[in-house]
Figure 1 (cartoon, rainbow, N blue to C red):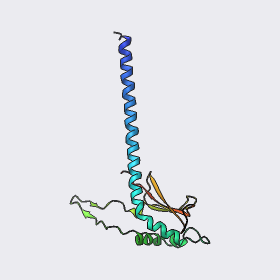
Figure 2 (figure 1 turned 90 degrees about the horizontal axis):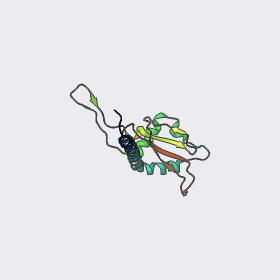
Figure 3 (figure 1 turned 135 degrees about the vertical axis):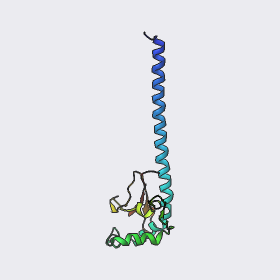
Figure 4 (figure 1 turned 90 degrees about the vertical axis):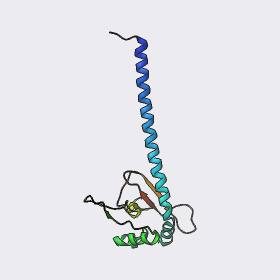
Length: 156
């Protein structure tokens, strides 16, 4: 049994409309996810503005890239701890034989870049969304000497 030309056009129109609607919905979902992740990272990174200012003050043009922070693995953790006081989240037993910890700490997502964008201190957790904060020398408003950045976690 053959369908009329009108019915064929109708079904083709409906199918293509459904495909376009599905693609637009997927694009909106992705855009909202990416935008929300960037918003969260931007707000979290704001807590480290004082740290970026301190890094700018500690920057030595004769010996760039903060060697005092890169020579000792614990120096970066200690420096971050000085500039960011976070609540400790205790691990607890769920009663189901598994231990649950808190969310990844900001320190694990924090990293340091030089002025060319090369990693000086890499994040422990890498995500697909990254936000950075420029490190400026005192009195300068342009030409950052480095960047402090945060990497997102896999799912927001």
